[in-house]
Amino acid sequence: MHGSPLDPARQYIMSEPAARANFSAFAEQVCFFAHTHVPRAFILQNAEVVSFYFSEDMELVLDKNLRYLVNPGSVGQPRDGDPRAAYMLFNLKKKCLTLHRVKYDPREAQKRIRRAGLPEYLAERLDYGR
Image 1 (tube, rainbow, N blue to C red):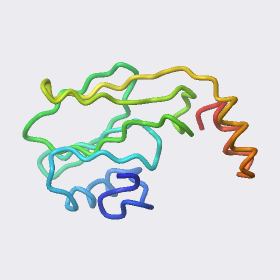
Image 2 (image 1 turned 135 degrees about the vertical axis):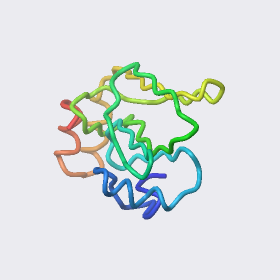
Image 3 (image 1 turned 60 degrees about the vertical axis):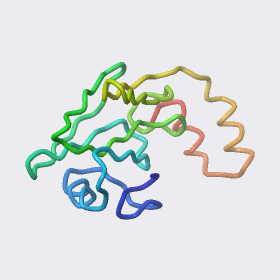
Image 4 (image 1 turned 30 degrees about the horizontal axis):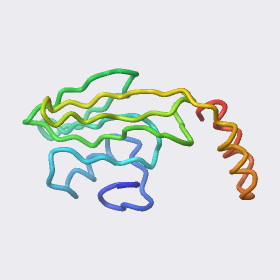
């Protein structure tokens, strides 16, 4: 979903307390969300929520006894300081997630943002990943 299990359109999951509230809203082991555009995982373990930020090519092997809220990052409008596109592969056979980065030239996206009359900061942030 885009936002969160509790509010698929609008909620940002940016903290352990927000993640904790959302674990009750889905039954599956893994839930993917995106709204923050930051590659991050929240893990529910024994009623405690821990989190970490993914680094490039990092592999997370899923533990069958844990539950996960995972943000795979962003192919556009990155907000983690890395202007490259981020995507995640979910290997169902190995039960693991791997974050990858791809360099791209943001100039065309910037042109389209400006042509659409959107705020200038949306175009500028593509240069810096913020």
